[in-house]
Amino acid sequence: MFRTCKLGSTSLPSFNQNVGITSRPMRSTVSGRTLPPAWPCNNIAGSGDIDRAGYSPQVSFPLGLAKLTRRDVRARFSSLDTNRKLASTSPSSVPTAAQELVEYLNESWTSYHATATAARMLSAAGYIRLREQDEWKILPGGKYFLTRNMSSVVAFGVGEKYEPGKGFHIIGAHTDSPCPKLKPVSALSKGGFLGVGVQTYGGGLWHTWFDRDLSVAGKVVLRRSGCLSQELVRIDRPILRIPTLAIHLDRNVNTEGFKLNMETHLAPILSTAIKGDLEIEVAQKTVGNKAGQGTENRNDAPVAHHPLLLALLAEQLDCNAHEIIDFDLQVCDVQPSVIGGAACEFIFSGRLDNLASSFCALKALLEGGEDGSLANENSIRMIALFDNEEVGSGSTTGAAGSLLADVVRRTLKVLCRGSDQEGLSERSLRRSFLVSADMAHAAHPNYLDKHEGNHAPKLHSGLVVKHNANQRYATNAVTATLFRECAAQSGIPTQDFVVRNDMGCGSTIGPILSANLGIRTVDVGIPQLSMHSVRELCGTEDIEICYRHFRAFFENFATVDAKFADIDS
Image (cartoon, rainbow, N blue to C red; front, side, top):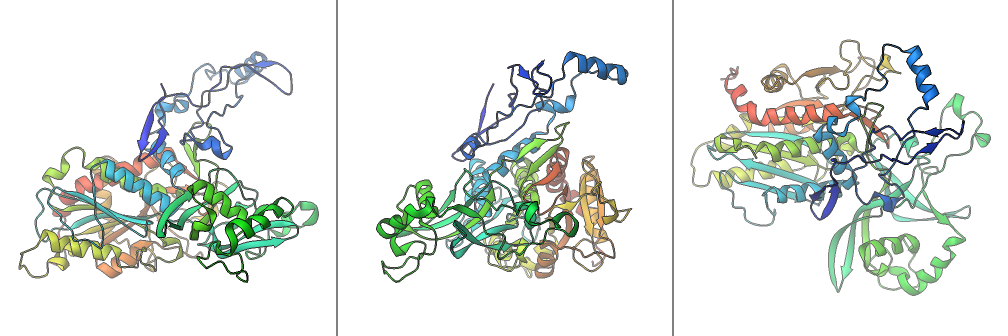
């Protein structure tokens, strides 16, 4: 039966039904023969209203074979039982964590939406929302969370047996992903088309954004009834496109490579100028010169954004176009995240880096406390999901900002109120541990030379512990051992990654937080392919492994750490 799973105010489909199976016979376009029903390998799309974007989760694939073809197959592969259904194509064989991640991804087009979705899940689980501008009341056994700028979130559960000076067990990740973001003045008009000016955010594989069905989502500042407000917006249907140049006009593209000028080639098309002629009247009579600027109605002020775009946003927000004062919008691919692969073993999606890590951390925190384990906990379990990692983390919502330090300091001050013990904050941080979770590079079958042979992570083989002698990752022998030991107690595998000496190495929030807070840190990640593409790939089993490992970290770390001799003592 079809069942909905409430994620805040949005109903998401659960996966107890066979989505995408048709019982209607299909005809082969080649032979004209009637084909049997489609193979029941579900195309799990996750979002119940994706059809508004032009995509329906009810997708069927005519993978059945005609009788003659099936007989031929049996003759060639007599050892195979062609009537046997692969267990991996059954919806029940897709790990629950992977199915839930797909739902989360389809709700979380931007860091704002990812944070809002996480906040709804936390509230539903009984976590109390804190505001940084208010006085905090925190008690042992309590569960709390806060957001900053609507794009980063910190959540924590205090052990019922908390003792002053005990540590924080933290999993850190980030909510942002590379994307084009709209410029403050985005209206472009050239060659008979209306375009949208964008600036690149992060280090994306920008050529993958061409010829995709695109839209916009993000945060909008409104003036309603004289009051300013911030609201999230997402236009589900494709309204933008970045067309590639035909090969007839770029004959050498396959031999010399795709040469992209990110300023002139990356601007998405919104409409033709002919269709957009009607917006001139809209601009003069409806939107005026206030569009996107918050200015008074002056005839000499330029229109910052195409009124056609503003009208689409206003329709989605149920407001007047002139009430839109400003926005922080990004270009998004509307194709839904899905379970894919012949054996239904992959997740095809944008933003896996790093919403996959964020989701697993969130799920581990939420479900790790449901079994009553917080009743015997004397430390604090925490997750910190930051914004702006893809551009260096240097912001109020990034890992280089004060967010985590502020939360730790204030939490200790409230919990240890009245205590005159020396160095409570420093002692707590010394007893703390941070898992810096960001996606890892799986060995690519077509580019195996890009990995060092002894450190080539594989899908379905465990979280990747990242090492770098030049401190691009914060892992050391002690932190790697502690993290592995937490997994070993629950029978969970791990693997290791070191970048080749002749290649550059990326970095994470790990070195930033460990340097600023003096906290023991390990850098880890889920192996994936196509990192920073508009469409990435990871394994379904790896999501389940990551969730289990993070939960094992919360539940086992105190015991593992207590058995580890501190060389500094």
